[in-house]
Length: 278
Image 1: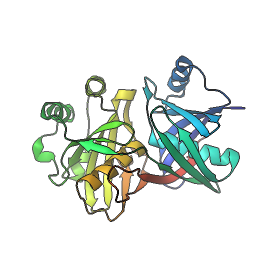
Image 2: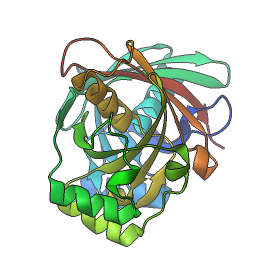
Image 3: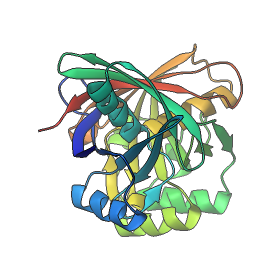
Image 4: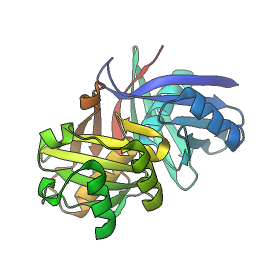
């Protein structure tokens, strides 16, 4: 059985918005070069490739220009696709470096889906690297939210986190994609997560993904999981759950929810809706 490439938008705002992802499901995965070629042809920020194994599903993720170890929105799309093919359920996934799960529940033309991320971690960012990151976007230290210090955050893939002190500064985000790709590759930043805190449990985000050949992602589950883990690390008053609005400034409003257990470093549950794309 091979599905070809299914196209879905993950973390959609009902039947609008979301982040498009490709999902390929077959009895055996193509070789890496073929998966890279298919992902480039699809042209979405990521395509998930999955095949059945004894313990569930073996999954690999490819952006148009590189393989990535984990992708949240493509995992949500995969959960929606598996629910459509096999019925509602929880599906165990074996990634390159982690064991996770995704669940999907069909609701008419939409599918609700939730993933359990890899373990999360965070660390201080090298000051020189941070200066380069700020300069890439034309930000200064005066633009930062002191309550959420810059950091390297990880929930299956590493991100640079920059929290801004105004919604307007987030909306004004711009950068040179080629320079961003060079910097993100050199620093091993899968993405840069730009955040504005509207309140303790509601955030707005933008997510440049030049590393994978994409200017900006409208919804990023991996970064949301990593960010939720970081809020736990710094003692933020998250109350166990946060909501993130992403993609609004690029015309593809997306909604993501992260549930945060108390145990340091533990997995984050990230959920949202998915819709099929024609």
